[in-house]
Image (cartoon, rainbow, N blue to C red; front, side, top):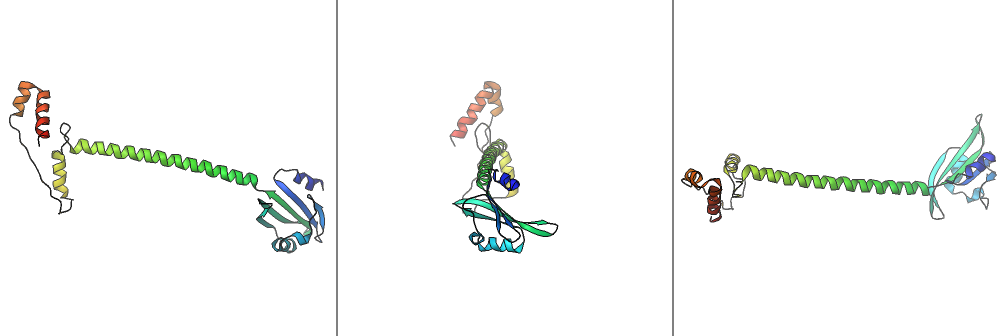
Amino acid sequence: HVFLSSMKDDTEVLEVSFLNHGNAIQYCSHDPVFSLEDLSQEEAEAVKSNQPYYFVKKVDDKDVFEAILPIFVDDQKVGTLITTYSLDNTNHLIKTISLITLGLLLLVFTIYFIMMSMIISKNKKISDLAYKDNLTGYLNKNYLIDFIESGPQQKPSKNNALLIIHLDNLNLVKLIYGHKALDQLILEKSQNL
């Protein structure tokens, strides 16, 4: 009885009962003392079959874990131990772990989204550097070469045009007025298109 009483002192253990080899109640930690008729059909079968039986059930709207364990000494059944454990701490732990996991997943997806946005932005900047003129923002010679090599990828119904402009005496403007003046001239001419 001392061992069974000490089991009840555990905060997780709600009830402890011991049935002798004739299935008579020898120890019961709770009032009122239950009888074999109080057991469900599954529980009664587990007691009679001498096999360990574990299951979760509801008691007073709380989830509990019940273990029915036959006790043998020298291959002789001396009784059956029935323990009922509260699952409140376990459910709380599962809920806490689930919330932490959800929070971590949200953090990971947020970081992933931010990184993907940064990568897309950087790729656009790299593409703009490769295919657009820094001064005017118009598509450049590299784009034209890639476009010709890959073939037109747009729908045939879309009208496309290629405009090639040649400005004479740009070197002369650069020599006389300098780079800034040349850039200003090119920018003004491109804005007039």
